[in-house]
Length: 236
Image (tube, rainbow, N blue to C red):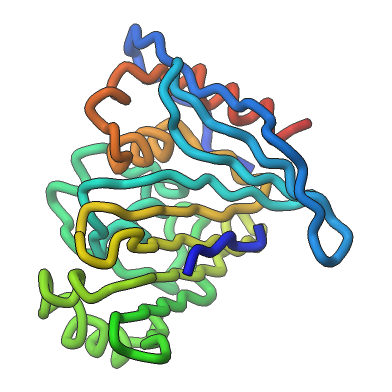
């Protein structure tokens, strides 16, 4: 059930203050013709010499794809948004195990729509949740969060579609998690799909690295240089 989502405004650049040497590199693989006439530029992403993932770029959007070996967590999709748009610090995850989207504006950022679609093994259709609706949030908790880890062991695919306003601009952002091995909880493929105007900032890149299957070896990543490299490839 592998999916490629149709498949930069950024937070201010901040130095990570670390003398790390590994930098994300983007190597073109091929161009794929889309059915509606557009072209998808496919890049292999390396961290130093180690394979990191793939980058798919269209005329207006891009998808970063990587594998995870620690398992899907319910806090991941909206935690990323906190890092990217609200500048939350690294220790934020230690204090908040669950994050829901919100309508009230914070730091020029707010959600307009937030839909979660969860496909469970053995069920033919997805369970849908309007994550800005209080009743839907409670159902999401009772059906999924309160029943973990059993509920996570049954997830085959999860998709989180968010429509946001950031600095008075409207954007659509999608996060997906696909279980690659139905018999294991430690083999997943994660995808973030964003407008090209939104370049993943250093904290978000660090978040991706921390949720990578080779997270231990990704600690040497130079976040500033990796941010610059991503910005460059998206501006071509």
